[in-house]
Every structure is written in structure tokens, then in C-alpha cells.
Image (tube, rainbow, N blue to C red; front, side, top):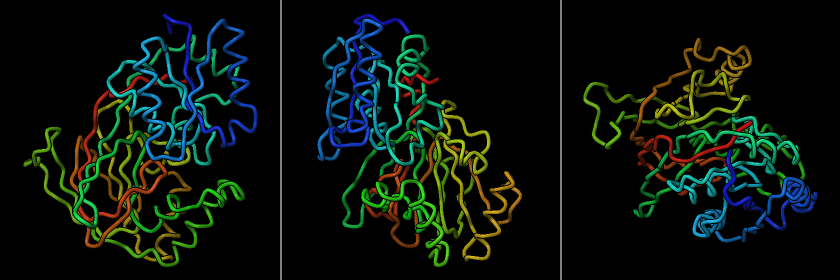
Length: 314
């Protein structure tokens, strides 16, 4: 990538693990060795802080690329702030799940990571706009890059507390998902395919499924690859996957199918691939948006925004 200003910005939590482990200092040293200035932008506890910081980097007009150093929430917010700017994003994984970084194989070594930015070619990646009406009738809107999930099994991920993740790491997700599988509380979902402009696609009928979990995927990390083979982060399409197993036994059988790499061979699997979709539920669900909980809703629409942000990947 051609650097016009020899200046990168890094967005990070000054109280987070990346700062405490010396990662930011190592990134700065790697930049300095290449004659590049690293501008440090520190997040706050306010929601949307990373988005505002990346927008601030755009407004400076002297930043060649932005590094999001954190988890999926930081990466997604930073991308949202860069939306439409043409300034590329690189993600250094420093969270618990790091779904986005794992989906794009970002390198965790600071020296190689900076070399990746210098020598890499930015690639256009889709984002997805989630528009919903919450339980008190207020419209919510949020962008994401990897996936949003619904249902009790998905809640096991998004409602894991920061303290639990600090103590138990990724094990937190596995234990919570196993516990949720005993009482998954399935929900009825009505899925209506839409055209990119939001109009109903008259060529495709709405589908109703009862599912323990529903996922809308734009990109798939390696650990979830079997769930939606062929999912492409730059094809302008969204993969909507329903796990229709509704009890512990059937979920256990479905897990075996995932382990074998062929969940599509299970009777408890449903997928549609669309540019946009309306989702209506029999009871309120809380969207798990790239790992963070949204507002409870029974009605939402998702739209793919093709090639919305430039990403530098290894």
C-alpha cells in the first residue's frame, strides 16, 4: 500500500490487555523502524467511542490507515467510522473472540503486522446495516462486518461479562453455550427475502422456521466455516442460517454434524443467501452484533452494503 503521509492511527483501550501487554509500544516501535508515525487514539467507556475516533482520523486528512487494536466491537466501530472514506482499516486482534481477525487471518506479530500494512493491498469488504424496532418502539440502527446472532445460544456469547472473559477466556463461551443448550427456548422466525432497495422479492417466498439459534453472516471465521460454506465477505450477499434443533438431544446431534464439517446434511439446518432480509420473531430476541448485545426486538431488517470499507488483510 502506498503511504502518502507515513502516518498511521491506532485505536485502543488504554485500560485493555493490548496496552498492558505492551502491544501498542511494540506496534509503535515497528512503525518507527519503518519511518512511520503512529498516532494513538484511546477509547473511552462511552458507546461508539471507537467509531468517533476513526471518524476523527478521517477528518485529519493525514492518516494513511487506521489500526483497530481490540476485539470485534472495536473493529466494527472503527470500520463504521471509516465507512465510505476510502481510508483502509487493519485489525490487530486483542479481544477474546476476535471473529473478524480470525476470518481474515490478521497476523498477531507487531513487526509482521506493520509490514502487512505497508506491503498489503486494501480489499473492499461488505458491511451490513441492521435496522430494528426495540421493545419500546424506538428504531435502532447499527452496522456490523462479521455476523449477528439471535436466540439463547447466541446470547451465551454476547452476555458473557468482561470479568468472565478476563478470567476464563474463550472457555467462557463454550461453557455458557453448553448450559444454554439444555434449555434453548426456541423462537419462531419469519424470514422475508428483500431486494437491495428494501422491496419484497416477489420471486422468493417468506419462510417460517422454529429455531434455537439464527445467524446472519457476512464473513465466517475458520471455527464457524462449516456453518456456512461459501460465505464471502465481498459478494454483496448475506447468509442467513437457522439451527432448527429445539432440544438438547437434537442440538447434540447437530454439533456432531458441525464437527464432521457437514451441518447442511442435517434436517436441523436451513440457509438462505440474500442481499437483504426482514426477520420477524414470535417473541423478543436480543441481536448479538459482532459479539456485543443490541436492543431486544421482534422486528428487524438487514441490508448488505457492498464493498463499504477497505480492509488490509494478511
